[in-house]
Amino acid sequence: MRCREDELNRFGEELGRALRAPAVIGLSGELGTGKTTLVQAICRGLGARALATSPTYALVHHYDAADAAVYHVDCYRLTVPDQARDLGFDDMVREGAIVLIEWPERAGPWAPPLDRHFQLSYGEEPDARELGEIR
Ligand SMILES: Nc1ncnc2c1ncn2[C@@H]1O[C@H](COP(=O)(O)OP(=O)(O)OP(=O)(O)O)[C@@H](O)[C@H]1O
Ligand SMILES: [Mg+2]
Image 1 (cartoon, rainbow, N blue to C red):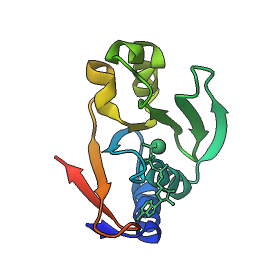
Image 2: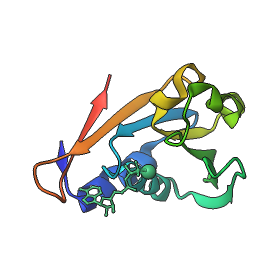
Image 3: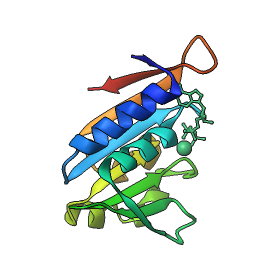
Image 4: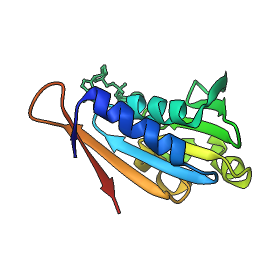
């Protein structure tokens, strides 16, 4: 689906409103295609409140929603998948949280199974993006 930024925001907010824990969502796509924009929209839809940014070089952001913990993990800066071992994915899943993972492929086998996996790519116009779901 082709979307402008406001459409991507609306999609994310609706997704967040409908999302129930536990859930793991992956977001893939080149730099600047809107993964963080989509994560932030999902968090707004969840009514998530920012709590803390983990000192693990800010790869993990922790939020609190009405009925669940929410984690936003950005794996972009991992150079090898083993660096994801200590990010705490196991604990997040055990806690029954909502986990939003940018660049999940960079975490290799350390990424938990994704319930949904979205892919963003550049569209023909500079302010358009293609949003798809990998199934
Ligand atoms: N249709 C669109 N959807 C999303 N973002 C758009 C769109 N059009 C323009 N933009 C701009 O593109 C940028 C997307 O940045 P964002 O940080 O969300 O991307 P990202 O995929 O998380 O990048 P990174 O891989 O660096 O983390 C923002 O500056 C946003 O304003
Ligand atoms: Mg990002």
